[in-house]
Structures are given as C-alpha cells and as structure tokens.
Image 1: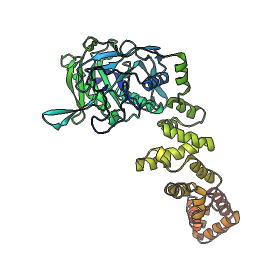
Image 2: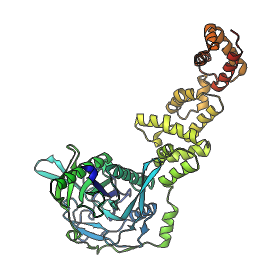
Image 3: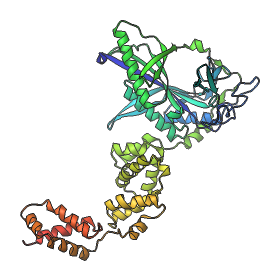
Length: 484
C-alpha cells in the first residue's frame, strides 16, 4: 500500500542562538539556571518596558544565510505574532513575517558516498523563544519558567523537498553540523536549543498536487523525528485508504507509545494577526556589515569534505568522519600542517583516537595529546623506530595517561625503540631457525604459511622491537638459502 503513495516533508528548524543576552533584552540567554532568574522587566512584559534588538542575533542570522547561499534581505522589520502563549508574558511573539532576513537558499544532504540531494530553503527568519511550561510538579497546577522567554532564535524553513524520514534525518543532521561550525548554536537537541516542526503529507505517486499537510511540533531528537514521520505517514495513508480525509492540524509525538496525537486545528496566517512591531525600528544591513560578516565566515563542512577528497585523496568515508565535527576537522588540519601524510593521520583520528573518545565519552577538545604529539608518534613509525602495534597498543595509551610526555621519551623509557641493526636481526633469525629445524624443513617442502610463525618467534626474541619490514626481508633471504 505504501508503494502507491509518496511522502512529502518540509522542516521548520528552530536554532537557539548562542548570544550572551536575549533577543530584545539584556537578561542572560544562558541555558539552565534556577527558574525565573534570567528575567527582567522586558522579558516579563512590564508596562512601558521597551525592547532593543540584539545585534549579535542579526549577525548570526546572516551567517546562516550566507552559508546556505540565501539572499540577505537588507531591510528587516520585526512583526508581532499574536497567539495565546501562557509562557510568553506579553501575549505575542516578536518574529518576522513579510520581511525575513534570509530568502531562499539550499542545504545539500549526502544520501550515499556518491549521491547528494539539494533541499531548497524557503526563508530564514529571526524571532524570540517562549518560556517553559512544567506540568509534572502538581496535578492541579502548571508551573512557568520564564528563563527561556525572549531567547533569540533563527527559524530555518525548508521547501517540501524531502521524501522519506531518512532524508529528513540527514537534513536535520546537516543543519546541526552547520550551526555548530558557524558557532551560532550548540546544537544540543536534548536541551531544546535545536528542535524542529515537521510538516508531513502524502500523495499518490505521480500526482503533482500536494496532499493536506499535518504539522508535528517540537521534535527534539533525530531518532524521534524519524519515528514520528514514519508513523504519521502510515496514519495518513490508512486514513485515505479507508475513505477518510486528512485534516490540516497540529499534532504532537509521544515517544513512549510511538504515535502522534492531535493538539489543535492548524492556525492560518489570519489567526496570528501579524502586524509590524511598533517598538522596534527597522534594521538596515549595509554593504560594509555584510562584507565584514562574510570575511569572518569559517570553512564550512561541505567545503572541507570536498577538499579532503579532491586535494588530500581521502575516501568519502574518511572525509565525512573528519568533517562531521568542527573540532575534529581543526585537529586534523593542525596535524597535516605539521605532518602532511593525510591518510595516515586520518586513519589514526578515525580509528584509535575516535575509539578512545567514544569509549570515554569525550570530545576531541578534551583529548590530552596535542596534534604535535600525535605527529611525533607517526614520524617515529615512519622512521622505523617503533612498530605500528607498539605505537597503538602501548605508546599512545601512555601518552594519553602521562600527557604531555613525548612519544620518543616513552619509547626510550620502556625500551620500545625498534631494532633495525642488520647484524642483530640476522643473529636472532639464525637462532630461531636453528631452534625449529623441523619447521624449516616443512617450509622448504612447501608449507610457506610457516613464515608467519618464524616472524612471531623473532618478535618474541627481540621483545617486539624487530623492524618488521627489514626482518621480513632478512628472514626470506635466510629461508631461501637454508639447505635442509
């Protein structure tokens, strides 16, 4: 049945901006704090209290627009969005209606190693957040925390270009990655600083006209976003197939039972009764302002991905992992500036180091080994002074534990410097072969797999310090010349 229908999805992503103060007041915009401590007469809507626009909010909104190739609206007007907000004291939200700060744009999502898809943006606008209603402390009363009331947001509104829950999840991941790269939002969905509303409809395959859309509010995890879209699409298809009609409404997703539930009929623009905010002057964005913000833009994740594949010769898999987090990319960039062996550095970052970070639930900024220390370790391997196994299993753990102790110092202390003296290695090989004459004879008679056993014995005799490459060459020569 689902094969006959197409899912159509658009997302409205709300990103709380990491400004120090609120959108239109000087009180703190920090997450947390005791309830009703990040407040002022403006956020509590006392009579006569006048708002003032936070310049950082405007700058951060422009950053998003530039990153998404949006057109930046030079004249910005704020509007009052009238709505019953129990947790927004003035009874309306300051938002943007007719003149959003960013118009159009796009975000590319990576469907596979070789396939991307462009998701168009309708617009990006600035607005303030509402406070938080708490319903669990008392069965007869709700509690209101106004700390979040007035915190600045950008709302990134996509076109209905996504066709599956997986595409919506990839888009949300890309937005989260982007706002973190831009340093405008921490992207912590579990704290509510990044969340989205999903507009979901279905239509028969091949039909151009869109179906009736339903909005699922306040999705604060990518996992729940996937589940909500899948459930809602199935609900709408079953409803249509049974002769029913999909109503345009707002729904919520209950993660405990995995279902969406109706909240209210969807409002229209007339219900919001938008009109220009009379207490805020329009904002004119000058050429100079735009050029200054453009000059400070960081390298973006998809730009780094392309560089790592095109210029560094890395696989799409490695490039994706390295560019996924801004701090990981910065660590990688610092390493290859000192040691331009791109694949080797990528292997260590995506392998041993990422495993350590995941195991200890750490970020790369908390990793105790500096890029210079890792590069020194890799150079020791290159020089044949230590083996990769010793470096990975013994030296790196001690570098982490005893930072900032150097790799070479640790290797010397524990006598792990690799043996590359040819005479010493030849002596060890002769001793191993002499102690295993029957196996040498078997090798000469065709059991070539025994070479690995000989290498193991030589490594034991040299306490793992034999240079593997040189030892392999000398062992092969000794076996070829053996007469048994």
